Image (cartoon, rainbow, N blue to C red; front, side, top):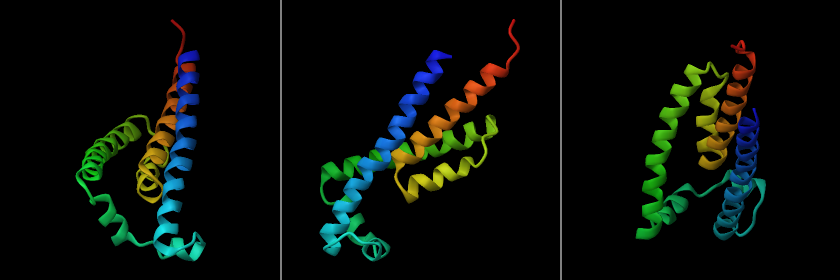
Length: 127
């Protein structure tokens, strides 16, 4: 049980960091392209400028390709683990990776997966 609790704490912490840190840079991008950060500027998000900047140089392109491959692997993992463990709303985590950030959606999935595994472990009969 202590190992699973430690993993839950790590995953919960990374979920928060994945939300805050990635969105910090999203705010910076929005301010740089729109001049301010408001609900209106966020709703008028400049996706073409964002994509252009993602592929702006070989270093950022390397990161983009690497994360794209990781994203595809993680989606496969979420689908298979979500079904195997009968996690409710497992598809939501995939949507969150696109809507908020890869770091947030995947860390949240791992946190809730770990909680489900802990519950299953507790409910198993002792030998």
